[in-house]
Length: 152
Image (cartoon, rainbow, N blue to C red; front, side, top):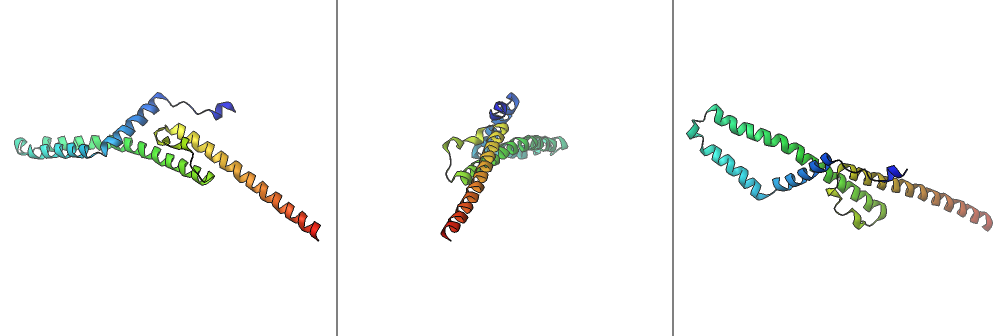
């Protein structure tokens, strides 16, 4: 049971990829990154006449954009998945207790495994509380019936 309670240590690959995805998605959203990308396209377009608008000239931009897009899809999707999962865990915690716990702030920087571990713990607490609420309701009904019998 103790092995399940402990969060699994993230693998080095998972941690590296998560960090790379976070840094890449932050960099990709900056104005300076857009300006650099736009500058590359402008330089490419201006160089067209120098290369006679050849097939090789066109292939350079097509290949470059394809490679960057292909890699960015995976990095940004990883970052988005973690952010969404972390937000869901935070919302679950808010719903469960009515107030957020400070320890959940910043969990979007955790690995997928660590977020899943937190999600499992939140769901287990919620199930336990539902079970306790049902038990309390049942006890209230029994007490109400007993009070009505005594009153009659």
